[in-house]
Length: 320
Ligand code: FA5
Image (cartoon, rainbow, N blue to C red; front, side, top):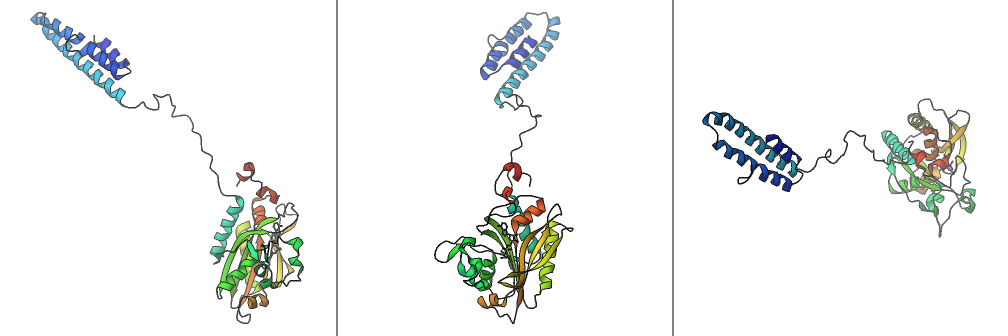
């Protein structure tokens, strides 16, 4: 009786099944336990004692099995009951991350932030005054050639350099100034491994009393070592920009070590630029620089072709 009852309660798979087993074994009228109890009455007093003890033990065991079966069916099936193996390795969801150019821009902001440079912004659709005129580039200057710029309508264009933001900052605040500006610029250049028609520049501008070329070279060297590594080699070449005097171009030794690639242009802010924004060139001096972000990113990560940065091939992007 006991083992039959335990099996019945143990195998019950629904509340109805438990109830059936309860009626069969524990039912007050026709239950099998009840029948066993009836038999007790017919026994000799000597046999009654042992039988009674056994009867009570069986009764408790069956009642406990009945309660256990009810509890088991009330609680939802566990993961194991549903055949889910918790020891199997899971599927890791694929996480995206920031584009290498965005990472570069963020790092540059962080790095120049530690040198004390705040972040300034300007529009990508610019007027000719900010892109050329105030930068000491007169109407006749070849840099304004329609073949070298994306003109829009009525004196507007896609900016060809972030130097526009120098002007916007100086127009809106008195010296001293210490800012960087990061953003897209556009030029109808022929695309190759180091040129694109849309790319990014970081502009830097520092204006104060007594700023010198030595400050410019120090900042650029410190920057290159911090971003590209202590062992990076950079060199300054004399150059010309209408908005700086003197001007330099800055090269970095490319990964592979066999050639120099131009990182950017820089120089001491031309007095004419100060005059255009209402600063007094006898009071303040300043330096400015404009570096190509793609090339910095490429040199840092040993990327050989600028086009890889724009193709959005996940096999490439996921490496950074
Ligand atoms: C300028 O744009 C000046 N505005 C830089 C400057 C700022 C000089 C402040 C003085 C003071 P340049 O045209 O050389 O200079 O461009 C600067 C850098 O942008 C280049 O050295 C290069 O790193 C990057 N660059 C230029 N053209 C492209 C291009 N088509 N694709 C990718 N990067 C480019």
